[in-house]
Length: 245
Length: 115
Ligand code: SF4
Ligand code: SF4
Ligand code: FES
Image 1 (cartoon, rainbow over the protein chains, first blue to last red):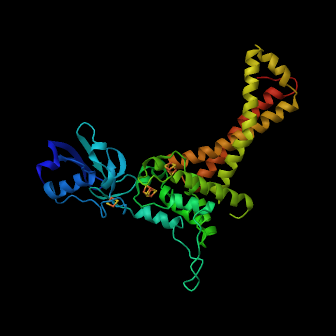
Image 2: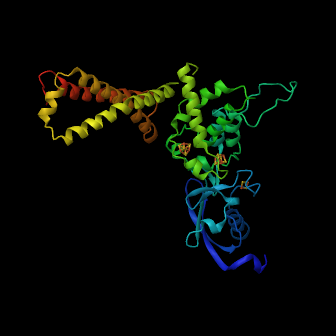
Image 3: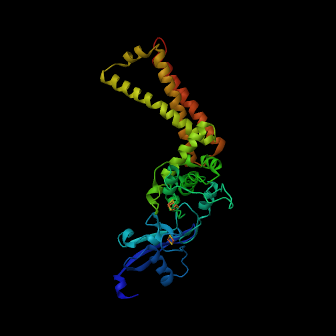
């Protein structure tokens, strides 16, 4: 570190959740740097103040979706969140993602989040074999446009942590899993559509969503799971009225 | 697909209620604007099959719509699940229909019972 890296000798007070479900916030004074991200702050604490601090990250550039935490009460991707954007009166509070069990410190247990992707039939079902010629997919069909708008999910779990319905209803599949299902029901190559519609129309599926758009508000990829879920509500309702569900 | 069925029924009852609610509001405004008395209202509704059907249908729609909503609220805000939720929904719907039917009968019965 050169002196040019620091804005000044200033520090910020960072309270960090320590422990599992039971625990407490521990405060560290972390030197302020230019263009510092929340992930930089957490890494600084682990390297300089307490090597036992647990947290999760991989890519550091907003691609892997593993660094999400609760920052001053809101779920955020910490590698792309600048301290200057979120600091309040020289303070930052960091906790694990909400709506998930805590493993330790800032690491939440993502198991239920990913199990719900499977429950929503989030896996692609191929309709062709490797011996068939590669299918041409036009980018401008209405279905492909819907799928493309929702496809860039990085599985960060931020929407899941931001969703009140996830908190209220344990079986609710949540915005990310339903958004994934929406991309697949719009994928012309997929062969699992009717099972998937059944999966997302069951109790705890798309109809449990309140459309209050907290997921859309917080998604770092600027996706709109609310719109995807509204699409699923429409499709399942039509299928039901046709007698297909 | 029980949850989906309830979802569809709740939306359908909402759609059917929209014109009824508008008519209901217009009637309330009309009645209060013209300074009509309770006796005046009852003299028009008593013995009227039209009003009996209008508010009878309204009561049933509102009861079904509301009871499904109560089930959803209980699912999110209470530990109740499964059959118990459905039982409460049916009881609540029956209660609303009973109360509503009593009011409809009171204002539309021939002779104007009215109380
Ligand atoms: S819109 Fe639906 S999925 Fe998104 S936060 Fe609200 S309830 Fe959750
Ligand atoms: S939809 Fe957005 S917030 Fe939710 S997991 Fe995907 S990228 Fe993250
Ligand atoms: S570390 Fe990969 S998205 Fe933040």
